[in-house]
Structure formats: C-alpha cells, structure tokens
Length: 102
Image (tube, helix red, strand yellow):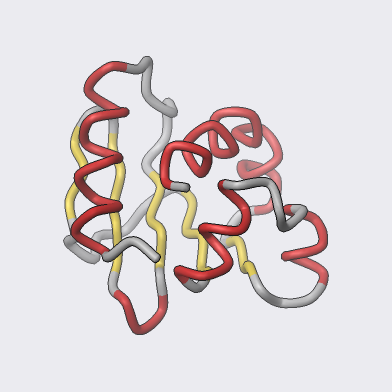
C-alpha cells in the first residue's frame, strides 16, 4: 500500500500534466493524513475545499484499481462526500484521479 508521501507525489505529477479538476478537492485519508488538490497545486495541508472525500488508504487504493464501486463505497460508509452534487459532476475526473493513485 502506498504511503501518503507517495500518493502526494503521484498526484503532483498527474496534476502538473493534466487539465485539473476545476474545483478544490481534499482527500481526508483518516489517520494517514490529508491531500489537498487545487489546480496543479497538491499539498498535505488541511485546507478548506469545495469537495472533501473521506476514505481510508486501503479503500482509496481499491477504488483506483476499480475493485471497489464508488456507489457501494458510499452506501457502506467506506467513503463520505461533503457535497454529493459536486462529486457527481466531477465523477469522471475524480475516478481518473483515483486511478492515478492505484
């Protein structure tokens, strides 16, 4: 399982090459820490974001590998979203982001 630092580095590389999400997103990885993405800027600072995704490292990895369905993760409480409407709007971009973390 990747560490917080490895995930942060992967996201920095991916966001520097991509178009971005158009909104700020915070991955609250519970006891492992936080990854905040705002445009090409990726940090481990716990800042406010348009969307906060709360999920464990293990479940994030499963989502990225498509071994865990996002709706199943929400329904079972493995993933919590601060703004369901925004999450649905960003779903393709967020899934692509998760796949870069796997």
